[in-house]
Length: 334
Image (cartoon, rainbow, N blue to C red):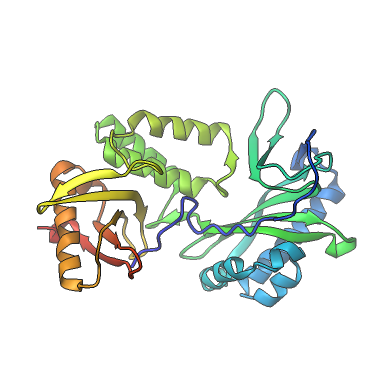
């Protein structure tokens, strides 16, 4: 069964739940080129120490280095560490970027706070972080490379204490740098090639995969990412599922409501996942037949998908029942 990512893929956000009093003012972001050497070294050291705990699967050690409000709700971080550790144990850890974030002048915890990093007239990066309380924070991005499944590890750190313990973990995000053996730039180039051929379905989902691999966290934007998303929007096929409107497909005398579509490479090759609603998944034979009917209908409507993907996953969700999923290579869907 594929890993179904929840908009942010293998992202773990155990973020702050503190409530303070009303009204907000200025915030600031300091890039690594604007930091003092001492500031930069402190962040790099803290990030590497935390990443080493992830690499070694030391959940208890990581929790001990976490702020209390996040440590109280540590299950999602623990699960992500346990999943990632075997993949990166022999990898090399490299700090790719560090940012100092100051929201001390905020008077309350807002729904989201924007940090503009890179100067007033040429923002390199914008971070839009949800529900961050007033305080001093940092964001660090590391790559675990030199392994079959390289990962990007992003930490949000909260300042508190002194010396080596001056930075504590306040949020953790781990997700792949590659899918089916290719990185985000490769998928971006392939998306452009599909767009040139007017294969917009393939182009759209290759752009989606590129964005997922290239963005270390879901709340970051940059000129390059903005350009990618603009190109993706230009080829978006009509009728794609959204958070408020499912995609409707008729097959085998049934109407299917598709809630989500995304790519997956958990079996080694790039597949397209179809996530849809149904009334019952208790009968595996009937569920498999229904899934295959949906696969056939989708390929009949969009035969170009055979050029872009190894196969399809159909993922049926029924109320109060276990989901039923199966994968078939394109040549088996008949």
